[in-house]
Length: 140
Length: 273
Image 1: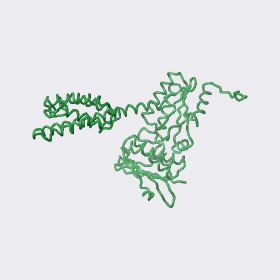
Image 2 (image 1 turned 120 degrees about the horizontal axis):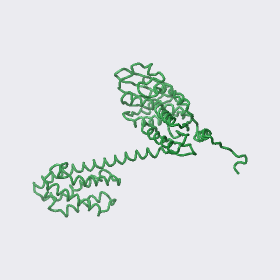
Image 3 (image 1 turned 135 degrees about the vertical axis):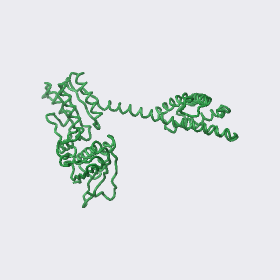
Image 4 (image 1 turned 90 degrees about the horizontal axis):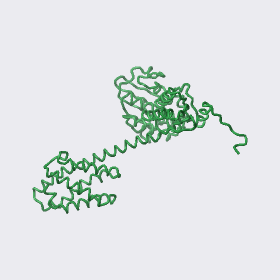
């Protein structure tokens, strides 16, 4: 999916290679979510989704990067974040998106929960090539 | 070696001048004087031993002095440049001697310069190491500071959590909470997450583990400070807290804990007069 980045502000890239980077990604996403005027609840939802995906990128993807910024489509504004890694990929996406299923030691709600927290969710993955997850939330 | 002994007094004086000028009086000149004269002596001894390598045995005394000096500078808040200048200023102080010097002097100067450069790098390494020690000790102090366990009532303790809850901090919180349960003999514990900005699945998992551990010790745990946006996010994520009692505010949680431990709160009709 091509992300409709807002023309006036280019998206920012944040590498995700250690635990602190998850916190940094969260802070960056928070700034954008506030800029595009999301309500406090929407902000918290988007930030939490970004936090889940950043941690997935780190833990399961072996590190990668996040690109985040403002988006615009048909005059609507929103915030988007793209998480990309070149890790092992996800063999069965349906299974990975099932509540409670985890290949690691987590609760198994990160990926499926993140999908429920945002307006648009795209999962692009190939085994041995990596995974890219794109999330978008539009301002009301 | 000879280069350093010919004009010793002038060179050291200029060296000390150069260094104390760059430190702008934040260390007294007498102290700089003492430090550098000691260093100078050690350096001459090292050169006399004929060592060519700044990391060789001949310079072990110099290295020890420089490490000490760098450590002090780092603690006192000087910059890396202000630390390295202690060595590099000696090169400048030696330059005048070269003007009327022979070719041999120049060769000797270049050899000495290489040793001094190595020593300057050494000060930066020692400086950085000290800084890292300071940072890591501050980080652990911060972790201790930000997780106090407070006693709210007889048999009721609370942990107000502030900031990001990662694995390391959860470990500290859990240890402190469990220890406090034993020390105070409390049967009610409240974990307040008002100050936690986002509750994602990892934070939730850490909280759940802490509650389960407290339960194993016979205590009842309440999680308080769940703000509206956090509640909605937790629901959307699909996290279930099961039969763990959660409350919106610390006051509600305290009231619940008191009721559970058999304390009745009574509001008097005359409004407390």
